[in-house]
Image 1 (cartoon, helix red, strand yellow):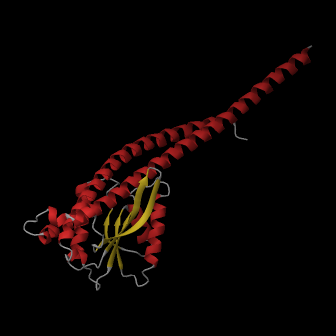
Image 2 (cartoon, one colour):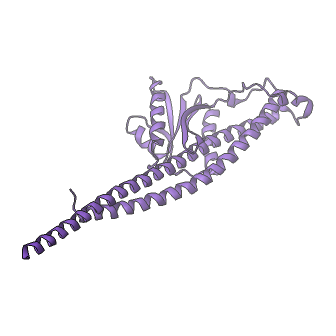
Length: 288
């Protein structure tokens, strides 16, 4: 059995750890709220562009664009989005497991990998999957300007024929307690969605200047960047949510350990007091 001094030392240590975990939980909660706000804005923006795209497509159903045409001779690109730091529960583990399953499908190893996040980069480069490119300083920050720069770089590689397609592997945010790793085809863009009733009526409602084709040529890259931005905003929001929950669980576990140790400390103190009283009573009886 541990001594009273050892138990008190452990209680102080766990109390200090609890305070750190609680502070990290509050920081992650603040970052999560900001990321969630940016995510909602990103979803609204993409929904607006998507509706506009469907309306214009109804006026130009045979539209063709370089972003919709793959180059089969080139290697494909897989963008793996993980966090730069740990203490996020199973967030990175789930993404890495899905990435391993996806890479196992490419037996010829024709996939070029772009890493966003240190955790995925460190894990896969040690296992023989070098980085075509790596972005290792995002730190979960929903910086739209930086995200758009990354997306435009990948888009330029696709347009110049250096890659046949770009897939995004990231954690899709569903709720504060649930994020699901997914693989999504980003490029080439598949314009196969059936137009809505409003979109079908678009040719009668709108006049395009100079033409629907020209509007689509300008709109499609904007839509693609908005879709890429939304994917990373989903990933960053999921990361902060996972870290917030992990820190809350750590704080709760620390409190449970402290409660158990406090109970054990009280038992030892009570036993010590009882022993001292018994010795006093025994001494008094011996002196009679």
